[in-house]
Length: 402
Ligand code: HEC
Image (cartoon, rainbow, N blue to C red; front, top):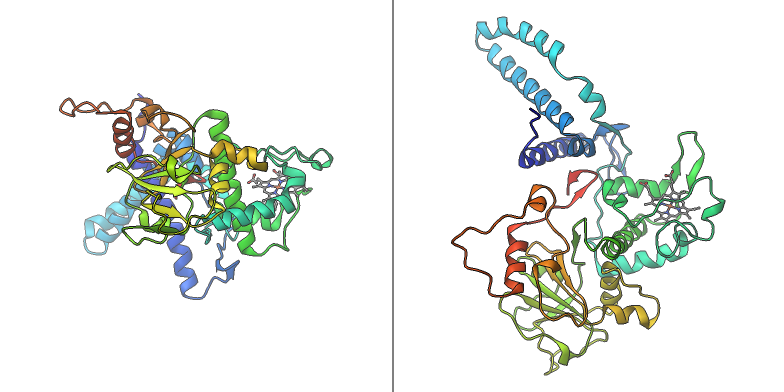
């Protein structure tokens, strides 16, 4: 019978693979053997361990676990051999058995091509500002091939050796962010060596990270529009806020609380307070701090936040028309800062169906039944919050937990 690796074990395995590579890199960098590239330590090899295949091929995940167990077992035996004679005798046959029976082919499949920035992390923090800057760069540098909507049908696309891919699906999340960075900065080539995407050597490192932030925000919105779901978790973008009671000054400081993000509309349109949620208002125009009509606990202080959130919702932003579509929409962010649910403008009340970012995996296929002792939910919002809290989401990039 096929045995599938439990999800938790797979997660642990992936985290181990990732951490050990990063720790190796950090150690080599600490002793001065690795230079910095683009502001962070360089990965010195042309290969790295792959995670995508592990997550997709249960067979391979089993083999990798077996291999790891063999290596650990041999390690323990080697340690014992330092002290006890019997272990010394056992070591050679054990090595032979492992060498003959271990699933070595799995090793080759576990490798993926790497670049010096493979493990680089974006320094931007996914802020309203970086996404907005990224949008400008995209308009100037990328639209001609990738198209305003990111589908790869820009005016120059037809004349290229290959069509640019759509950037709106899950593609961006299938890659490590450091590898996307490298491709934009240094261009791409086909297997035959033909340049398929130009290098953008004139962009500053920070600008490349910014354009990637924009692509991610935009792709999340397009996915939501096309499939009705945020198949990949999206963070509530960071922004400066003003909070009346807590004195918090940034979205980051609100982490740990559930947020109800209210887009646009007037002060009068703000929903009544609810003890289960902290209201974060994103006004269309700047609001004077201390406006007596402003009932929101926190108000975003950046005028660019509204268009940014409109992208994340999949609403067009050119002209007033687009922003109109986002005005009055609401989103819920969970305690970890992930955007989880949205309500369209004019929608009355919340229900479980508004949960558009769900936990992947088995929990998704069979939603956990509430225990018999749990009292029935008082309203749709209660049911939604329970599910959101019970099914935390996890971001993966290039298959690795992020
Ligand atoms: C001259 C046309 C052209 C321009 C300009 C261009 N691209 Fe591309 N881009 C392509 C093509 C073609 C591919 C597919 C290349 C391949 O798969 O070999 C691509 C692929 C990509 C990918 C997918 C990479 C992957 O991992 O598969 C990303 C992300 C991307 N481009 C981002 C950008 C960004 C950001 C800009 C602007 C700074 C940009 N591109 C400008 C043509 C272009």
